[in-house]
Length: 278
Image 1 (cartoon, rainbow, N blue to C red):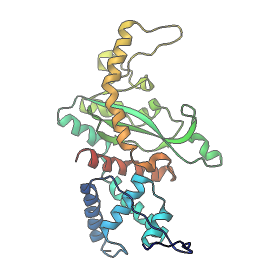
Image 2 (cartoon, rainbow, N blue to C red; image 1 turned 120 degrees about the vertical axis):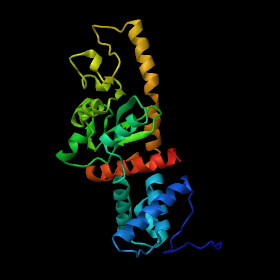
Image 3 (cartoon, one colour; image 1 turned 180 degrees about the vertical axis):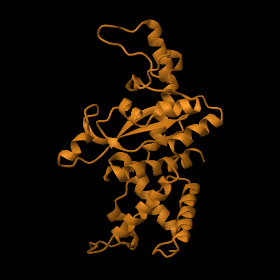
Image 4 (cartoon, rainbow, N blue to C red; image 1 turned 90 degrees about the vertical axis):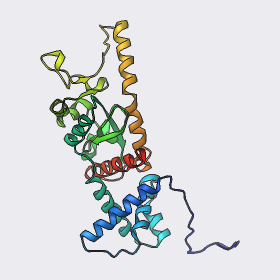
């Protein structure tokens, strides 16, 4: 670009930005899109598959706006949105189901999984329909997700999106986490938000370990405090799993509805595992 002191009237200024992702991830998305285009017999796109993969990753990793990317690459905004949703659906379809994910962990000798819930912020919308999305715990609007990781913090499963006010224990009951764990013979480590999810008649049959909770009338003993510390240390890898997931800046604030949010999170699970396990 030549130097000029005159204003660029009506011109678009384009700049380069580093995409801190591995080439293997870009290659995976490119091959995935090529296979999809071949399957639907629609090989033509205004940009090559590799370029489309880079643009979609830029939207997900850096939360680049559609209008900005569209103008910089001379494609309509609606076309870029369609490409993004197409790639998200392809990736989300490859996210593991709960029962299969647990069977894989059990097959490779795993004994426990780590479970936790998180809130992904969303835009605040007007109307009564958005009220359930307000989380009193976090004092903001968002969508609630459950996630499972293995003992090392690698994400293995993400639930569907639920309103932000959903409690962790309620979400675990609706997803029948206890039944799935018992089917494959696995245990789970969880925080105090999951107390009451697993209440077997025989305490030895409990599969979700949650630690001890103090009340105003009952303080924790020294042994119970030590047990909570040990449990917290064992659960710490799940926070690393969430940190890897939220490195995708599009999760800073979701601007889509719950249906698209579920596909988005599951697609990011696949991409996160590609980056972490490469």
